[in-house]
Image (tube, rainbow over all chains, first blue to last red; front, side, top):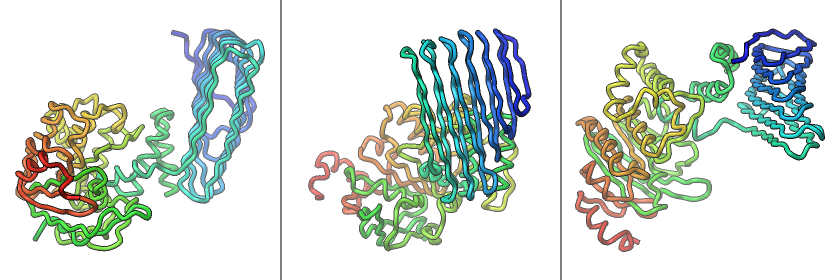
Length: 214
Length: 247
């Protein structure tokens, strides 16, 4: 087992994740830009909850077996738009990245997600995945998503996907046939959607946000 | 007073009319079965009774315990005592079965102005029924219907029914995708719920289910309405002749 560092990055920080270490990073309402450099055999795991910020996250996987796992939840309401940019650079062969970004938008909330995975010519046997999902609870909410793969190496595995839509009507109906009123059912589904990537101790923040935007 | 009274109901999905002048009366304490070929409107009927907003009622009425069911939201119908066991229960990732059942029961108690059960009584109420249906603690920790086999999903639907104690239960093709052992477990779960105040509507293609859950009345449904009503011998005759003679 690698040692675990728990860290707190401030705006504009450069973080070096040391060889052979697992670094866990959890932050609420991050903003600004920061760069994380992950060394050989090191792993960077992050969870960010955003409620109206702009963040630019760059991760450089610079040694063999370096890996990163980014999980981002964003919540957008009127006057609290989110802009998220991720830039994952596989600058060494055999490096691995995974990103899951999930958003919920209410009222006139907006969000923009621009995610790039870069794999240069000589970085072979890398794997990168990027998945973005957003639920719009209002006709007036909007999401812009620009996934980008900049891949020059030929022996790599990369995937990206984005799904944006309303809550699933069938799921909503199912819950309601069990006596759960519409508003409660919606909250359950949103919580279920986000809890897949949200640490248990951060769920209450999401619940508070939903209560404030009913 | 009948428990459920459907009169001259017409319902459509999109532009297509599926239920055509459909009428059915179900007394308290009885088990009715509706049999019919694919596309006859059986599943539409169950969705319409449960209040699925995807279906549009164009005319007719449904009275439940003397109240206008069509004026109620799906959750109000459920809390009044209507339960639909789905043919294909939907998966809900991220919501555990236990959380879901707790919320469902709390909603019902709130509807009647009661306080929710405390954790101890909730677990007690759930465990008794879960054990009888072979539903394990591990299954209850998993997300609703995610990764369960067809048989497990139907057992869990039956568990919900027993747990929420509705007065009117619609079982939409409970037998589809079940092997005979699972079918017996589920049927037993239904049979122990048969009481003087509770009624069932079984929707099925096959006579097999009706051997395990014996109905009082059988209806044949073709093209959106009932074409024949009889006792359980009707299913046997149907098994021999098929639906061809009704068309």
